[in-house]
Length: 419
Image 1 (tube, rainbow, N blue to C red):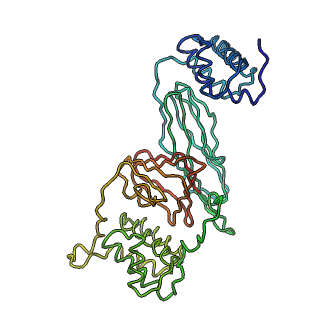
Image 2: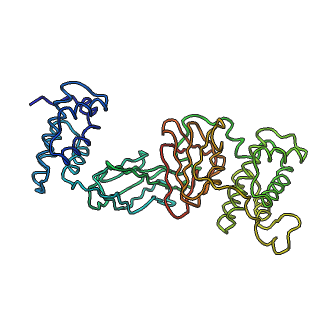
Image 3: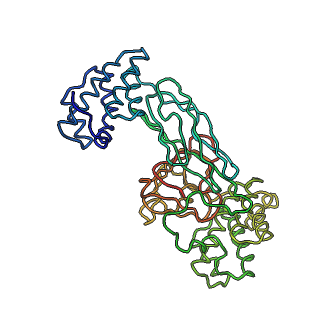
């Protein structure tokens, strides 16, 4: 019998173990040629690697068709004696002992929202997952999963979040089987301690240049803030939307020598007012006032702007129409959207892509730092997918949340980091 391989070499072979287990389950034996092909695909070569994976196949073959729990435990321990970690050994054993017929992946929830928690307080929830063998991978160190593997029959899995001092956690859990994978969005918010300011969920790895200009009143004099904001509100009430260029033209028409900071600030106000315009609920209006005040707008002016968005109609409309918010601007709902900062996609701004997305659409985020000057409320099922967690980041410069979902159906985040 060959001697056990060093730990780092065993780790490099682990991706092959699942395929070996499937082949043992379906065929009973694994040919040397098949092992060589698998190892070539994994980038691992050499006679020692072939001998080790052959031995794994032999060990797993002892459990094929066996229901005796003692024998199954013995096979698992034999793999662990060869240096295979416990979780991959359990998963391989579950694969070998599972029936060959396909079992659909079943998950009792499509997302996990822990709600608002007190500062420093964690929380746990139990979910049911079946259709394995499979495993669960947390997208954040603040998420804990026990157990992180599951079998064919429904398994009770406990998911917990650590207590953070403040801010928000927006991450995901990936559920993986040999046939499919599924991402579950995980959300939690924490209130700040009374003696401490609210902290962001995760500090950005790199500073966002002039972020303060994106969330305050820019360089506008105090006496100009009210008239500008109310004019923005009236335009939003009539058109439902203001682009960056339209905001800049509005400031110029008001006789303001606007800087880029001024336009950024006013565009942030417009985005908040647009959200209220599109969903003029009591909660939405209250949230709009809070968000405007958080951007340096006096409370009285913020309330006037929200009122103007909800009740102001286009000139010439009937008195009855003035009692209802104007409809949003016409748009063509899209099922496949690409957000690219260089302009090579369908959109350059994530918030605009969410607004233009059809139900169950997929929004692809190209690599880069996608900066949000306000949180985005999502009201329908959608998938937002980056290129990779390492290259795609969504950065919130101000506010309590980056993305908030309150629709019916799956909301999925993939391959991106939100800070």
